[in-house]
Amino acid sequence: MRLVLSTGDGLNAAACDRLMTRLTSTQATNNAEITIDLQSAAFIDPYGAACLCLVARHLAERKQHLILVLPSNRRAQLTVAQTGLAAVLRQWAELRNVPGHELRDERSGALPLSLIRTRSDVQTVLTYLVNLAQQRLGFDPGDVLDASKVVSELCYNVVDHSQTDGLVVAQIGQDRQGRRYVSLAVADAGIGIRASLARRYPEAAHWRHSDAIQQALGGLSSRASGGGVGLRSIYAVVRRYSGRLSIRSGDERLHISAEHQPRALDGAWFPGTQVGISFSQR
Image 1: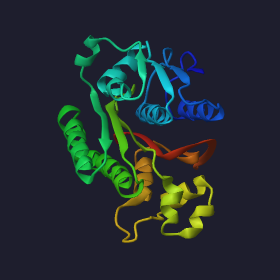
Image 2: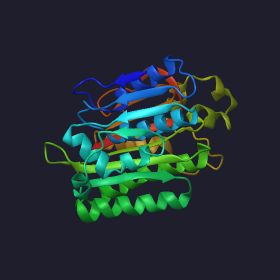
Image 3: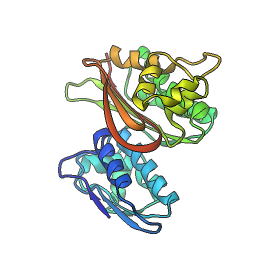
Image 4: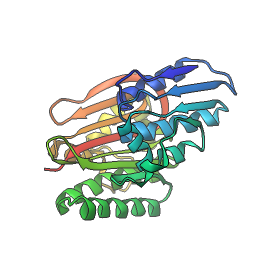
């Protein structure tokens, strides 16, 4: 089976939805060869990078041989090099068209793909992100604090609720208007939001996945102690900074922006929770 990203497309949330749908709709046997061709990808955002890693690991666990053709576009190649994406993917896939060594020396505002297993891992990620945003990119302390709250909450959700490990990756830079921006993703292949809520609220087991996401955004928490700031505070940060938020769990993804009401998108079932956020500095 060969999956090809269309010319000019980027590997983002929408492209990942299509990729997961194609993979789950095809009944591949063990040891089957699957090729994901990203050679024409115009960019890879943090959500796309994290989800690609989860898909590669998922296929490896099913004993399927994955060939990944990495992008030829320079912008996408920089993302691959600066986030350490190729090094992570090599654990589960055969890589082709890997960026040259010269790109690895170029510096940008990137938090490399990092594994989240323990609360200590979360603190390491937060320290790196804060130093990157303040010292190298000159973010205001208030904006850095808001960004770090988002990252800490999402990462602690992985540690406390997913029953597996997770990945975090971020890019920090400037948009075309000269505003500094943060784009980040935290993803896992664990039990998902609905199952997590159902441990405390049994009725949640019968909800649609998008309803479970909406309830979590509204303040419902699976923490018995009520600790943590929850997805509700993340939603508030996204609105404050006119940002965008995508949360995928089970077979649905909720897309949220500051200007529009949340929109539920159907997709193929995939384990865990994948979250992508982007917002600009005020």
